[in-house]
Image (cartoon, rainbow, N blue to C red):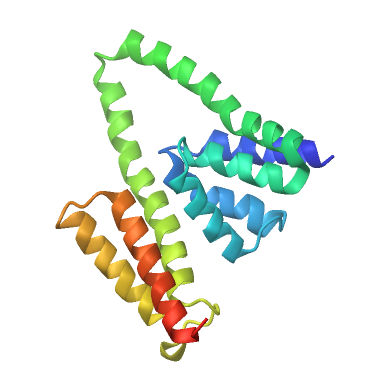
Length: 188
């Protein structure tokens, strides 16, 4: 039964994750945190971090991670297959349609109309994760604001957008700084 749940949950994710991995984050969160309770919101934010840092698509990495956590290696395989199956079918169909009708204005209109939806999905996922970072105790009050997280977020954003630093370098620097400051604060 758990294998079917994993397959169909990630089939839904794969089917409706138009716009790539970041756009799929709200759907993954809905399926694995809200609907099934397989991960907590904190564990989900860790999943996003791990899935981003490892090579490959975020959705596939996330499916593999969740499947392995819930049902071991067979669960990882089933969840991964569920996440990629819709893409195999849809991409094959879209490639056929695109090459057949790419000169039509209707095709360009359809593709242009999907851009705002994809941007909204990505922004929604990003804001959810940012709010979780800034308010770790899920109480959005000024007293519970994670100032260190806010400063690191702002610094990382500035370093990547304005200074054009490599995102991997920024991740390692921010992770190291956060860990170092936490060790200094707690004295561990």
